[in-house]
View 1 (tube, rainbow, N blue to C red):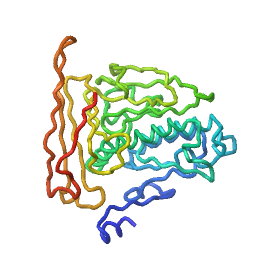
View 2: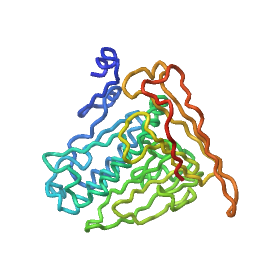
View 3: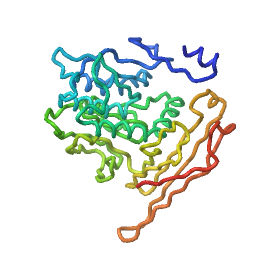
View 4: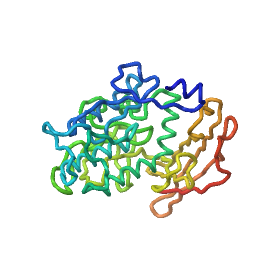
Length: 332
């Protein structure tokens, strides 16, 4: 399938494996099988998806929400089951910061708009969509470095002994180079219940929570209460996350581009990768990189932030469809 698409049609192939062993992931995405709809399985997927990076198996695809119900599992054949709806929501939130987001099940309900927590499920999917430029750039980094988009913290913080502890390895990971995710895998079990969740923030960095309301020094465990709509996501200080608007459906070259800045550090930078998204022309240099930087200055009484966008740089020809102009939004 892969070679026919690449060499016969000159487009990128996507193959989907079922129960393939080590080594088969040279071409297809992995599939974790017909799992049960249970929080134990969700927790297991959080742990195994990141550690699969250790054998270069980065693109794992799960049945988000679980496949089988019954046999002691809450199930979701009846969407009014609040515990099952909460589990599907938390599973989708994990999928939003996983290599692949794909819901599936065994003749049960997956139309999120019929569940009690539809708005929160929708918001997690919209966040995934908004992160497309960041995820696509991360995929380019994976192509060049073989480091999976989802990988253990010890890849980035090898000198911090705490990141090797099971309580950390089994519950949280890096999503790309700048976002730390600690998906909630336990259920409150009551309608609209919240969860107290703890996250270890690696030493040597300052971290911000996703909405920018809290900054914490690394080397500490932080605990917060998360409502159904909240996800434990933390970002390195100084990170610039390239995004698109929540309602943008363009896969390539979004307009406007949204640069989300976490200015808890004095300066920060990143580089966005873009190509046509279809062909293999990127292998010949037909892609564009856009470098951005911010510098934060001043004190408590007089603050300024300078944001610089360099002209897009192409190694070869500009990829098909690349715009001559577009808008940029800087979001702090």
